Figure 1 (cartoon, helix red, strand yellow):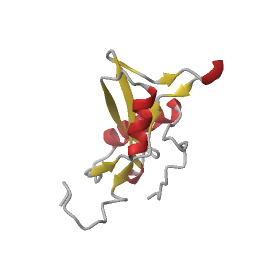
Figure 2 (cartoon, one colour):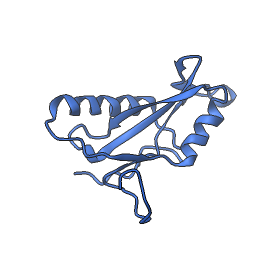
Figure 3 (spheres, helix red, strand yellow):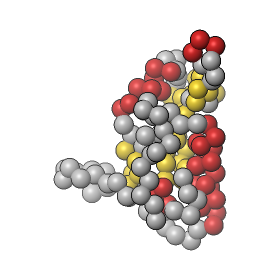
Length: 127
């Protein structure tokens, strides 16, 4: 099993669109090939990811979340890839600054439980 540390993202939580698509495809492959019971119980979503989506798509009516995996054979690499939705359409890329290269509109600084579960001792939806 992996000890994934979200090494593919930038400081603001963005990840390349290709990575987001690969993770989602890995999740689908895992589901279709696995007889295991999914062990992921929750995802922690840092505020920076939410703020990035809001800053990049202030007119968004919501977000869509896709379950993905970095490694299609390892459920502990589960990811939740989040993308803004504006006028019913997913915002997959954002215009680059000063005419530069487009930036990803997808974010993930999310951690799954397990392996990273609440440790504060207080009640959770999982307790």
